[in-house]
Image (cartoon, rainbow, N blue to C red; front, top):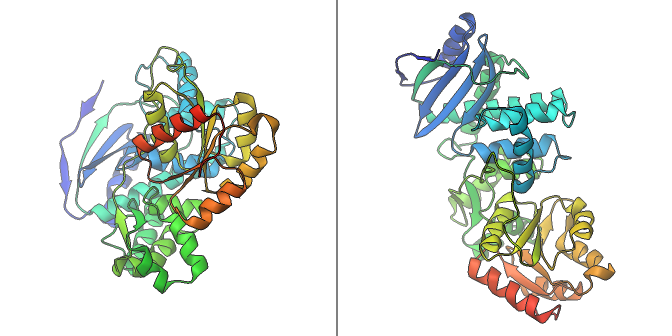
Length: 396
């Protein structure tokens, strides 16, 4: 039977008060949920015998989950269509129609299939908890309510809240010491005044910054991508932010996979278009635009697997990101042009840095067209229609 306790307000939810609340729940061997609200965000903590199982909610739950799963389980195929297929499989084993807390259930499903290890699960869940407690520290005042309602039937891990709270507190203190307390790591940096920035930094650093600071990835996303802790990365950008050359902006969470109890049917019958980009936001933006226009899509976020997937699917047109981990669009384009079945396939380079040198270099490796970021739906459809009608005629 589900029972809810009264709503409680805590004006300054410090680490000490967090330890007190979670300590009481541990002492009482609480089973159920703790709903915690602050700054228009709500988190739901799942408990078993007073220990933490998982936490959902917050400002960017999908981006957070995706970030750590991709980081700690790089071999998993995490495109949106793949996740939806996995949820279909999971539904056959789980009668809950809405698949509450599907992120946790999917980790459990992958563990049962021996796709991921217990250590990987521990790393993912612990980092998710640390991030959530960090956000709670930044929010300060909270409202909470406990509910005796067991939603998760399996217990992958039982986590000690005290250790997590301590790590999050240290991270929050480092954030404050770096004078970042009024800024959220869920904001995305974007260059607003490139000419000013170019005056202040070396040319090589400027090129790197123009590729990184596109407003498509949060500070947390970028720190994982370049293997640098969020505090030091954010602190290094702070002078440019204070001078106005770089701005931190709000961006939307990633789309969660849409679950349906019915099998997923192909919705488009038009030409197949592939998108190779390590940014899930870019892939999904292109997917939305193209499927609306009745094109089939194949999103590839791991460039190292791109050629194998392209050979299997043989798309009619390819979007190719210029900057990706482990390779770049020029190299991949050059490799594709050496494969007979892709010699005439239109290849469109995607980049946030639309310069003359990049265009010349793209032409040299055989690119068909050049498209800037952020994605503009009209430009995307225009270049696709033009390139498909030309049947491989190069135009840059």
